[in-house]
Image (cartoon, rainbow over all chains, first blue to last red; front, side, top):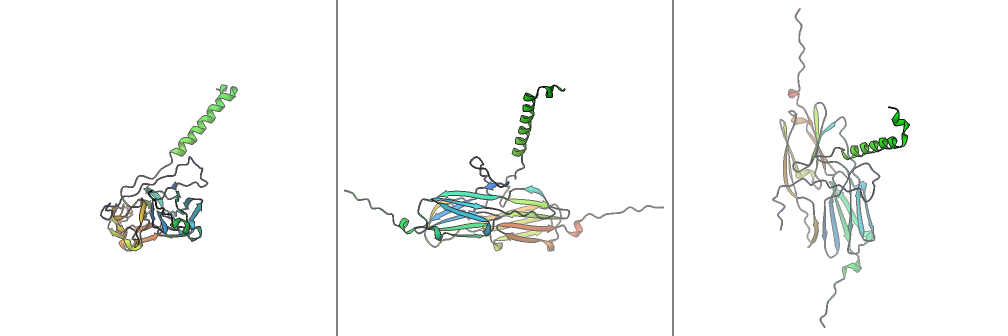
Length: 137
Length: 146
């Protein structure tokens, strides 16, 4: 197992979304958020790092089995200051996932705290039971 | 000289091509952020006698971050703990980073340590630093001797 507690942290590189597929309406860079995905028998958890985005600027859609997260950053420029050195660019975040199991659409919970999006997707009753016993004949 | 306008079609097309090329070059040469030297990625803003440093610290609470300022250095350190779940989880994807970090930033002036302010909002830390009075350049007026 990876011992991440002891290892010094490294800054993640900003991954840009390529604009080949679709043109963006906003003149701002759009990044792919770093995401963790966990699953239990009952739920699916998605946690994404979206620094600079507050709770009100997030769109989450689940269409068929594609979950799309769009987060709009609202960068603030310190008044009267000039940027002299930059390692990150503020921007928007977007990412889509194909969800394999059925999800209860009405029960999806999303919270944003400290630039971290937490999504809780409860699985639908029908999706929970799907163990099939294979009989040997 | 006037030949350009005498033979319009091809030259006009060349001009247009050149304009298009210029536009293409400009858009691809937009300044980009440099690769972060270490965690966290920072942006540095300056005005006459003060500096603002912003850092991307998603998932950190204010109590997870330590800020130390001594004369002209700023040290940021902290720890981001991994998520703890009490039920058994299957992990599909792990891209977020956890662990300890420490980063020291050299400042261009000596800071008034009483006037340092730090605000954490939506995973972005903003630190305002003001130049110390003793470090400010003094204006000296020469006296003319009659």
